[in-house]
Image 1 (cartoon, chains in turn brown, red, orange, blue):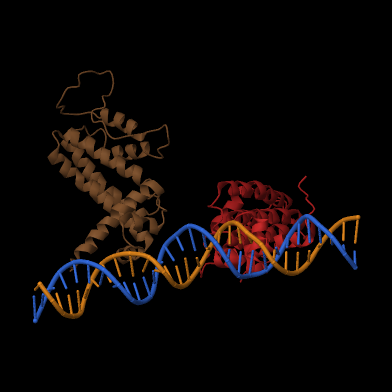
Image 2: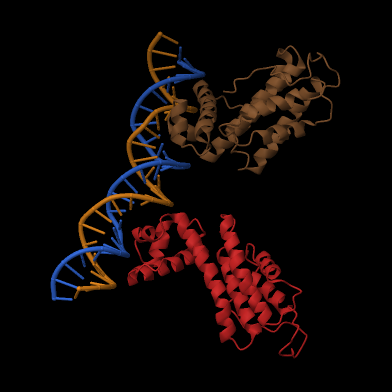
Amino acid sequence: MGDKAKRADARRNEEALLAAAAAVFVTSGVDAPVRDIAARAGVGVGTIYRHFPTRAELVIAVYRHQVDACAEAGPTLLADCATPREALTRWIDLFVDFLVTKHGLRSDNAALHTYFIDRLVPACADLLAAAGIAPDVTAYELMRGIGNLCVDAAPGYNPRNLVALLIAGLPETEPETEPETESGPRPGSRTAAG
Amino acid sequence: MGDKAKRADARRNEEALLAAAAAVFVTSGVDAPVRDIAARAGVGVGTIYRHFPTRAELVIAVYRHQVDACAEAGPTLLADCATPREALTRWIDLFVDFLVTKHGLRSDNAALHTYFIDRLVPACADLLAAAGIAPDVTAYELMRGIGNLCVDAAPGYNPRNLVALLIAGLPETEPETEPETESGPRPGSRTAAG
DNA sequence: TAACGATACGGAACACGGTTCCGTTTGTCG
DNA sequence: CGACAAACGGAACCGTGTTCCGTATCGTTA
């Protein structure tokens, strides 16, 4: 049970709604009108309500979807990147995306935050272990720190710059490549921060 | 300044609105529709908005009004009651009324809570001093304690009973009347607790 | 492939909230 | 009393979330 044979367009629309809602939430906040989300997804409002019984449930679904995507990106990056360290860097980039996107959601629902922690901390821990980061910092600590750096990105304060500094400073127990200089953190993986 | 010569009906309506809003908030909560408040006050919604620019400001005004009423009742009771102790008891009764009424408001606005404290603690302190209550308990402590007793009055839990116990136990440094028995707190001033 | 029934869709319509607007009423003052 | 500013009432407006139902589409079966 559970795998109801849903029609293809239904699945497509659900996916589109999740993506559209996420996008709209970024620009207009979590209180964006349902109609805006429907428009962005190119569907009618009725479609939203067939997939998500209520507005709140859509918000929750988006949140979980994003958490899942972030968690699942861990193993993928590990497999695709040249070094675990790069995978970690890239993953944190995704994580920051998520944080910046959803800065308003977590406070709403405690259960969501639990899900967030349970799902993402292990993913992060795996990356850290693979990259050979010393256990001086736990995954939770790191995520928490990054999260704190990302609270309200005002003009003139770009969280990504600070996060870049943070991950540049992460120690390694089994260093793979020796840094050439000690003079400062090199922006190893330039990200689309503008 | 400030005493703009307002028309009599205007002042009357403002007063009625404050009272009506307070009453509606008790039964329907702070989120009660503006229309309900207008109906209860026997005025049109337009009248609300002439007196209070926005719904939120009405809520604030009601809160302040209640705080003021409670604070000003202190001296009045002291003058009118047979003993300071009775004045204190009656005042606490008013205070509990207020707490039960406005259980939801304080969390909204920090400034309101400050006003609440600044205005009511001195009033309570005066009553305590007049009643000759030993400084074992400060006015703030007492109010805080009563406040805590009053959080969510569920069926089967009547905060007033507990508060009665509390004030019955207040020590006196200069007792004016010796209690006849020790067997239990006498309901000296029977209040409308039902 | 054609027909058909279940499934999903779109968006107008509804319920309900705060707020505004304006014709009417009423208090006040000379 | 008469006039005029002040205040009133409540219909109308706008922006929400949600429901409803006629229509379009998908997937299956003949």
